[in-house]
Length: 516
Ligand code: FAD
Image (cartoon, rainbow, N blue to C red; front, side, top):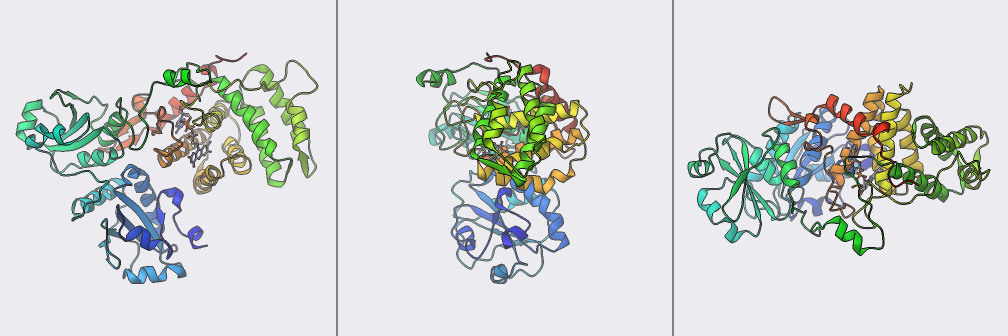
């Protein structure tokens, strides 16, 4: 279909326009819409597509105010859309203000920088030029004055006002304002360095810098490693008492736990727990694989790869390691077209009863506990398990850099119960897994793919408010993982991230609490 042939899918967080949805997306929408018109076969369009995808990820938090869309004008069925809007050269970006009327042709931008910072600034310029009616989800972007600050809390029902002091040509204040727009109980406004009254009142000497201003009239400077957009946004989003709009307020987990039947197990958030890894194995091998009474074809290949990776790289309790090795030798010896889950289960449950080989039944999640029953648990265990395996494979100097990723990809595709997750994961794997050429880049690929998922599902119904989805690890968790480019944009220090991952997921740091 055209959607598959095109350069974008909805998992890129870009709305794929078609004759069926174009009206509802572009006409009378509460959000402003950026539409890229492209031809799937044109080289410039193909070259531009990774930058457009980066932009979508970068401004994901802005979605209620401004959304990104794309239409493939080389697909027959879209021809009429493209003619209606009079687009003849590609790629081109058109900006549709919120509440655009049918037939409105958006304003055009032909120069499309291959640079997420410039693209982001372009979006802000467009938003600022937006005439009435302003997109309701979009906070004010103009600078605030001393008078407005003085009466701010009389008219705004928030406890936190973040003021970003900056030079007039800086975009940081507006970027952070938009980054925080989905969070309640905070407003972010920019203050120009020329606003002397305020600058003097707070004693501001550095531009940019960020201050928190409270209803009492007190203020404090926000401490960050770099005075840059992403660092402000991380710090502000992590403030105590802040929640996303529409989410219940964060409650103390211990309180929640005592009111439920489950027993809350206290744990250290910066540790990995063997109990979670074993629980993930238990659930995967006894529940998910069990849903397939007969395993054959691609499922058989995937299961073999998965169990092989476990047998090779899982460094757990000796009895679990032995069990996985036994299971693997049995499985690899199955040369027929299919096996039954019953036969697999017999080996898995070690009915021969040798005491030094077993996968114990799980006694519940520890580091993967959710603040409520329906949060976290198994998917958290799956991520953790595979991060541990990629790190272990890299320590063990495995010969195939993609071995663990292939095992994960196959397992997720054939067995992982969340179909929607599996499709998205497969899409990511298809797009970029082939570029993994070293064991280290396999560790980083999984980290970065996990962050893409975090980015996409931040704020969704499945997010545990106690464990918000962030781009991980935060500057607070790993300061050296984060840096800024010459032009002041956030950058990951990938070497440092790699060291951090190898440390965080290393076998000798895994805690064995709550195991029998
Ligand atoms: P998780 O995201 O499960 O992370 C577990 C732990 O890993 C975190 O607590 C943190 O310590 C660490 N961590 C976080 N980010 C990273 C990183 N980038 N690198 C290394 N470690 C990290 N849910 C959906 O709603 N939609 C989806 O499309 C979707 N796709 C998924 C695909 C796969 C393959 C998997 C395994 C899960 C998917 N899920 C999806 C579930 C979702 O990603 C979470 O696992 C789930 O919401 C539980 O979240 P959590 O808070 O426990 O954190």
